Length: 225
Image (cartoon, rainbow, N blue to C red):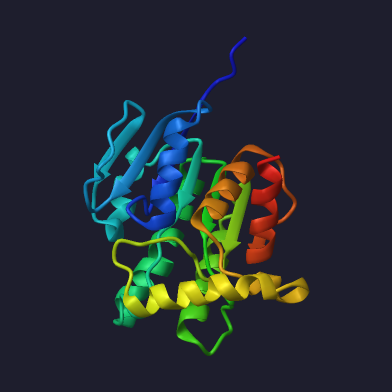
């Protein structure tokens, strides 16, 4: 008897990691439907894909459409890209927190969200504090299966990469082999590794709720075996 296939929601599918995740899930026979909530059209065509063009700041208005077996939240900005703190908080705290609320209300049992290394709700650093508060809001919903990923610098080529960012990533590629042992978690990480881990976590039992960057790498490596 053929097992039932699943549906998934992706938030942040226009980004580097979210876009990589979308392409992987569209090719994964375990999934028959991928819903994407986004502000901009995707350059992707598939019978599996359902695209909803919405204002993500008003996600709560689309509760009736927010139904699936799993949710992958890959939204996120940077302080350079979004210098206004109020807007930044709406993105990095507001969207994931609202998505978790909708998951709970609609009885979606699996929620994955990308946070960042250093997330801490008590931090004096605005970026780290916002991420930490987001994690707290997500965990407060007590969704059956929640995993929070805290990658360090994400490698790969973004469409909007700046020269300084590209240069820093090249430097990190050289430094990565030197970061071993307790310093391994500071290695840059490729979006493929994050995606591999998210898909594995969604489809397997795993003990950690919060995964630091080195653990993300380990799960991704083991998932390929």
